[in-house]
Image (cartoon, rainbow, N blue to C red):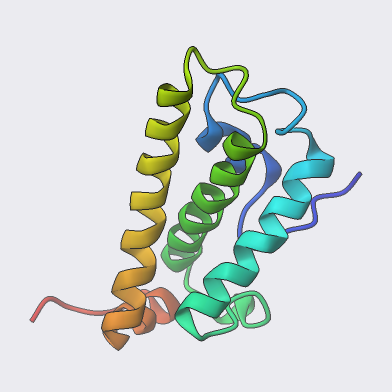
Length: 127
């Protein structure tokens, strides 16, 4: 099977999901689907098609989008099968941390166009 996503890779998702993530849910067949869903969610939430316009994203911007996509996809990995974690609470803590990281990135892009410009160009300064 071939990597299906643009913003992150299957290994990025498995890494974010953690060592206790189910082997089934971090399988490439699943993570390919989760990555595509995460990409759609990022584009929807930020109202910008990062996937189609990926070539115009700066190098550091690609890393920022990689984090958002892999965090959101990892949430779906953990949610699919929590059996590998020592408790449901441990899985929920992982989900909450991943959601906070995803949400922080998206919130910045949505509330201030300077973040979007920074992701695209890699340039900006602090006011």
